[in-house]
Amino acid sequence: MDELRRASRLAADVTADYLGSVDERPVWQPVTEADRTWLMRQDLPSAGRPLSDLVHDIRTRVLPYPMGNGHPRFFGWVNSAPSVAGVLVAPIAAALNPSCAGGDHAGVLLEHTVLRWLAELVGFPHRPGGGLLTSGASMATVAALAAARQRAGDRDGVDVREEGLYGRPPMVLYVSAEGHSCLRKAAELLGLGGRQVRVVPVDDGFRMDVKALRTLVARDAGAGLRPFCVAASAGTVNTGAVDPLDEIADIAAAHGLWFHVDGAYGALAAVAGDTAAAGYAGMARADSLVLDPHKWLGVPVDCGCVLWRDPALARATFSLVPPYLRDDHDGGIGWFSEYGPEQTRPLRALRTWATMSHLGRNGIIRLVDTTIRLAHTLAAMISAAPDFELLAPVSTSVVAFRYRPADRDDRLDDLNHRIPAAVQHRGRAFLTGTQLSGTEALRACLLNPATTEDDLVLLLDEIRAAATLRTTEIRP
Image (tube, rainbow, N blue to C red; front, side, top):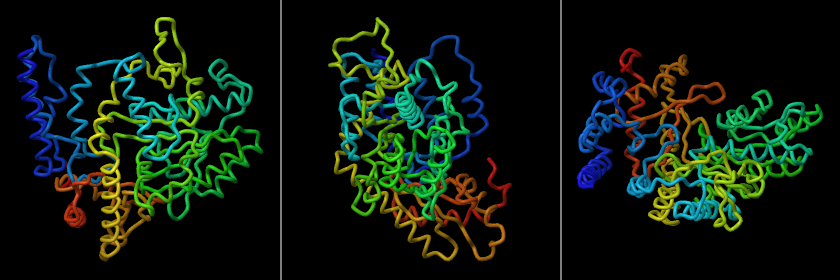
C-alpha cells in the first residue's frame, strides 16, 4: 500500500499540473515518430514495473498528445473538457470497481438519483426504472429503439423477442437528413435494415420538414409497411438545430409511432434562457429521450443516458433474469441490467453525481447560457466579417459557417475542406468541418465555459492564416 500511496500522490500532482496548464500548450500536436512507436509497438514487459514508472511514462508519452478537447480553443465535434469533480472521483470509482447491473450497493442506488436529476433538469417525466446510464448515445439509442420495436410488435400481436421480425411487414424508422448516424446503426443492429430508414428532408433552418414526414408516413402505411418510430433531434451535431418537437409529437400520436428524441448533445439547452429553451416544447412528450452527460455537462467519458416515459416497456424488452441473479432488494423495480443490453456495468453514476453536485443547478444553467452566448457572439463576428459567411441559424452552441475570401470564390469547397486540418496542425485552435446541403462547411462547437471572446477572434484569424497554407504544409 505504501507504493500505491506514493504513486497516487504523484499521479494526482501530474493530473493537476496537466489540467492547470492546458491553455498554455498547443491545442493539438502530431505525435513524434519515437513516441508513436512507443505507443503502438511496445512489448509487454517480462517483469512487472513500479507504479511510479507508469506515471512517468504517462506524463512524458501520453499527456503531450491529447485529443485537445480540454483546451478553451477546442471547437471540434461535441467533446467537452472534463469536469474537475468527475476527474477527482474517477479513481474512487475504479477502486470500488462494482458491477452496477443491480444489487443493493451504493453505485446502483446513486444511479437512481442521477437519472432523476437528469430527467428533472430537462423537464422529462420520470418514474423509478425510467432510465439507464450507458456508454454513450449510440448504446442508449439501441436501447431506446429496441423498446420501440418491442412495443410495435406487441401492438401487432407479435412477440419480437421470441419470433423475431422474419415474415412481418418491414418496420420503418423516420430520421431527419441531419439526424445522427447512430440512429441508422441502431436500425441495422436491431435487424430493421438500413433500407427501412426513411430520411426526412429538412427546412432552411436544417430542422425536420414536418410536412414531408407526414407524407412519408402515409405513403409507407399505404404500401403495407409498418411505420413504428420517428426520431427527432434536440440539437444536431452539424448545426445544433432543434426539430419542431411538438409538431412531430402530434404526428407520432396520430399514427401510433414511438416518439424518440435524440438530445445527446442538445437536450441540456432546455435549461437555458427563455429564447433558447422555447424550441424544446414537446420534448417531454417523447417515449424515449437520449442525452449524454459526457457532452455538455463535461462528465468524463464514458457516460450516456436513455430516459423512458414507460419503464415497463423497456423492462419487457430486455429483462432476462437467470436464477443466480434473483434479488429481493430492488423494491420491485428490477436490476438495471433488465433495462438494457449490458450485464456488467461500470460505476458511471459517481462521476455524473460529482459533476452535477459540484456545479449545482445554477452552475449547470450558467454553463449552458455562457456557451450559447459565446456561440451567438461568434455568429455575430462571422456575419460582420466580409470574408466569412454564416451557413445556419444558431440554435444551441454550434456555429456552422465557411471562409469566403473575395479572391477565392471559385474554389470555396476545396478551400474549406482543407482548412480544419491546417488549423489543427498550427496548434493554436482546433476546428472541424462538415457538409451542409452539399456545401463544405466549418463548424465550431462551444462547450467550454473557459473560452473567451478573444479565443473566438483568434479562431477566425487562425482560419485566415491556415487558408494560405499549401497542402504540403499541413501534413504531419
